[in-house]
Every structure is written in structure tokens, then in C-alpha cells.
Image 1 (cartoon, helix red, strand yellow):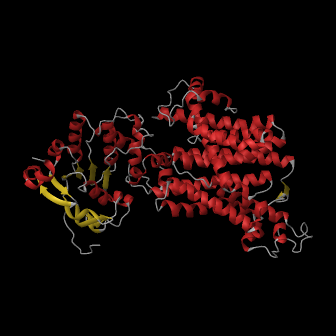
Image 2 (cartoon, one colour):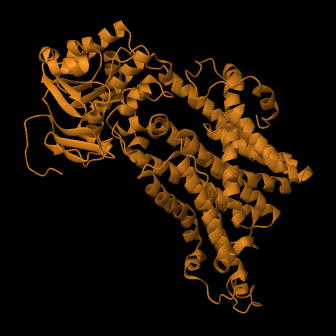
Image 3 (cartoon, chains in turn red, green):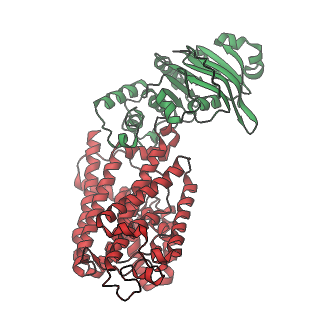
Amino acid sequence: MTSIKSFMSRQELIGILVIAAVLFIIMPLAMDIFRLNLFGKYLTYAFVAVGLVLCWGKCGILSLGQGVFFGLGGYCMAMYLKLEASTPEATAIQSTPGIPDFMDWNQITALPWFWEPFNSLTFTLLAIIIVPAVFAFIIGAAMFKRRVGGVYFAIITQAIAAILTILIIGQQGYTGGVNGITDLRTLKSWDIRTDEAKYILYYVNGALLIAVLLLSQIVLKSKLGRLLVAVRDQEDRVRFSGYDVSNIKIFVFCFAAVLSAIGGAMFTLQVGFMSPSFVGIVPSIEMVIFCAVGGRLSIFGAVYGTLLVNWAKTTFSETFPELWLFGLGALFIAVVLIFPNGVSGLYQSYLAPLVDRVVSTGKRKGRSDTAPPPSSGFGAETTAKPAE
Amino acid sequence: MNTINNNTDFLLSIENLTVSFDGFKAVDDLNLYVDENEIHVIIGPNGAGKTTVLDLICGRTRSTDGSIKFRNKELTDMREHEIVREGVGRKFQNPSIYEDLTVFENLELSFPRGRSVWGALTFQRDQDVKTRVHEIAGMVFLDELLDKQAALLSHGQKQWLEIGMLLIQDPELLMLDEPVAGMSVSERKQTAKLLNEITKGRSVMVVEHDMKFVEDIAHRVTVLHQGKILSEGSMAKVQADPKVIDVYLGH
């Protein structure tokens, strides 16, 4: 038992080290700051994808509304930055100086009460974690205690994503509407738009992603991680073994929500704005595709899947902008039909044995979560694995 | 709900239990008692309500009326995991195990400790757990297969694993729904031996069709028909009952 354990953690250690090397060394050397910033933006989606691995891949809860939590994190950050950018001096031209510009345009004359606390950075950082966690807890408690699951849960989360988008767009005096919260400049008087700041933010983002991966790894390695798989396989058996299944589901849903929110906050910092187009149904489904392409059972696969799909999106839509959505659809179908466990499943089947031989003389992993995909997927894999 | 304080010496006492699905009474005014250390078998034709009775006891189905008392504690308004924590274990008809986990992990998850979210996060696989898992695995003939993925077990082994997952919880009342269905003759014999062994110090309720097997294990037999008790008593008495021969055993 112990030898298997140590072997697995060795492979996972390699996984983390490879990702760290890619993030901290290879990419900064290979890219100029414009591309690196774009890469950093993709990485913020990886937080969501990692959360989905735990929530959907391991525990079987498909959420089509992760954009909600990404948005909540992003908006919390954006509200703070916007308030700092809206000093009375900077907004002297407005009819009410000292409030965000879009409020002034919408004839709002005083800062709404729920904006007030976002003057504090400490509050904002706490809110980025707590707001999505509480929101996920409410949704989770309402659904899972009533045994709502499967497609019904997926549809409800999708509806919530739609509702939040409509709410943000409709309340444009309070939220910036369809344009979102734009023109963000400084964080504690530190200009986030300079190249230097972008480098620093990129590294902070990378470090947070590694931290999140380690945290997820701790959860997956604990008995709770095995319970997640057990709930996915035989929910009733878990219940009749004395566990309150709804609590387990609520926990993992909240956990995924918090990860998404951290990604959202880092998105706002690196991209410099937040808008409802990252909250709604389409981005939420895209995030599920990132996770599926990476392989919904592997947190490392999720990172690569996110990067891969976004890289494809950028290169493809630069040349054929109108064809991208078809490409994305085709990719999703390919994942479902040809390689259901995504990039990581292909890695496990074809590359992992090689890595084993190179790295270890120990025993092979006794079992795997993945069914071997048909060999037709192999050709696609070799081109689709840039980061190894 | 039955509020009369009619405490008994029985481990489990079911009184006036009724459940109706859209007017159809699957269990109709049932009274049934299980003694300490008793193997109580429920038999009956298809649709007699046997599995429904087990579902009602373990909280999977909610009763329409009546009471189920376990050690004089009312179970009908408790949630499933609370009933389990009271000491009632349930095995399902089809082996329900965690196929993606190993035999060891299956048993470990059933070990009654760290059942809250925080408890599961901080759970340590210490010597207690390992010893107990090995002990139980030995009882259910799986000690050689601890590292094997559960999906790869044979049907009979899966049934045993699920029984093992219940044993590790050390329930006072163990409910088994057709434990030998789909087993080979030799597996069946082993299972009968296993049941006789594990029943020491606990009560077992079994739903079973295999009459030979029932004869081997039963202390007492209840025959259900259309949600009601048709006959009750020792195997010999039940087998001789003309009503039972009529609706179930055949001439």
C-alpha cells in the first residue's frame, strides 16, 4: 500500500513541477509581455477548470454556472479597483464627483450602500472568497438537501448564470451594465497597467494556481477525495454508510466556487476590466469544455486543457473568426466520442508508462480511473500536448 | 404517527406499518418483530413488499402510517445516515460498491469514523483502520484482493465486499436483500457459512428467494403476500402452511 502511495505522489509531484516550470520559466522566456499577459488570462480560467475536476469529474456534479462564481470574484475585485480609480479629483468633471463614472452617467448621485465596503482592500480580498462561498452554499443547500442532482442541477446552475447576467445588465447604474466595470488603473496606488505590473501579476497568478493545485491535491488525497468518487459511483451506498451526502456535495460545490472566484479576481487584475460576458451561459459552458478537454479526472489535465483550448481559440479566431464556434463544438464532440478522459486520459494511457520507466523502477500504478481510449485518438494527442 | 408508548424487548418492532403509493398499499398494516441475535428471513412472491419493508426500515422510503422502533427509538422520522448511525446496516439487491476504488478503500470508507466533511478531510489511515480492514477482508474472503479495483471483482466477490462494508460498521441489525442472488453453488455455501458467523452478537434480516439457502440460515421466517403477513414461524411450520403452499411455494 505504502509503495503505491509514494509512487503516486511522485508522479503528482512531477506533474506540479512540470506545470511550475512551464508557468515560471518556459512561458516568460518564450513570450513577450503582450502574449504573456494573454497567457495569464487563460490561466485564470484554469482555476475554474480545476474546481470543475473536483466538483464534476470526481463527485459527478455538473455545474454549468461556474461563470457566476468567476464573475463574483471578478466583480468584487473590479469594484475595489473602480472605487480607487474614482477619486473626486479624477472624476471632477462628473456631476457627482467621487463615484464611478457609469453611476454618474446613470443619474446616480451617491455611492450605493453595497459599494461602500469595497473601499477597503482587506474587505475586498475577504469578499472574493466569502461571497461566492456563501452564494454556492445557499444554492448547494437548497438543491442537494432536496436531492436535486444530475441534469436538473446542471439546468438550474445554467439558469442562475442567465439570471445573474440579466441582473448585471439590467442594473447598469449599480453594475456598469453590459460594458462591465472598465478603466481600472491602480491597486493601492500601484499602476496595474504597466509592463512591470503585468509581469508581477502574472507571477502572482501562477503562484496562486500552484497553491490551488496543491490544496486540491490535499483534498483529493484525503478520505474526502475518495468519498467524492464514491458519491459519484454509488450515492446511496455512501448515504447508507452513515454519511450525509448533501454536506459532501455542498462542500465540493463551495470549494469549486471559491477557486473560480480566485480566478475571476486575477482575471480582473490582469485584464483590467470585468463584464457580464464572463458570467453568463456561454463562458460557463466554455469552462466545462476546458475541463473536459483536459480530462475531467485530473487537476493537471484541467490546466493543460484550459491552455490548449484557449490557445486554439486565439490562433484560430485570429485567422477565421467566424469558424471558431464550430471548431469549439467539434472539439467538444471529439472529446466525448474519441477521448472521454481528455488530454490526461491520453497521457495516462500512452505517455505515463514511458515516464514511469524513466523516472521510477517502482511498481506501476495498480489501477487507473481511466478506460483506455481507442487508438484513433493517439494521433490527435501527440499534436495536442504542447506543454509536455 | 403512533404515539402510544409501547416499548418492547425486541431489537426491532414494526407496528401497524403502512405505505401507499398513489393508493396502492405496498405494505399494509404490518406488524413484525425481530429478536436479538436472530436471523429473520422474509420470503414471498414478487411484489409482496419484501424489499419495501427493508426500504422503510432504513429510511429510503417514507412510511404513510405506523411505527418502526429500533431499540425503542422511532426510526420513521429519521434521515438515512442517522438511522445508519443508530446501528442499522443495509445491503442492496445489486452489489452496490465503489467500483473505481480498491477493495481496501471500499472498506475504509465504510469504517465508522470521520463521517463529517471535516472528519473525512482529517481522517488518518492509522493502525486501527488497517487492522480492522484486514480483519473484515479476511471474514469475507477478500484478504488477498485488498489492492484490487472493486470493478474487477466477480459478482459473488462484490456481494461479499458489500457485506464486508456493512460488517465494518458493526451494525446491531443487518439487512440483506437477496445476498446469494447470482452466486455459484460454492459461493452460496460460503455465504451461508459467513452469515452464520457474522450473526453472532447481532440480528440479521434477510430477503431471499432461494429456499435451500433460507432453510440453511433462518431462525424464523415471515411470508409476505400483497403487503400483509401470510404466515410466520419456523421454516418447517411455514413450509407446512397450506396458505403458503398455495400462493408461494406451490404444490
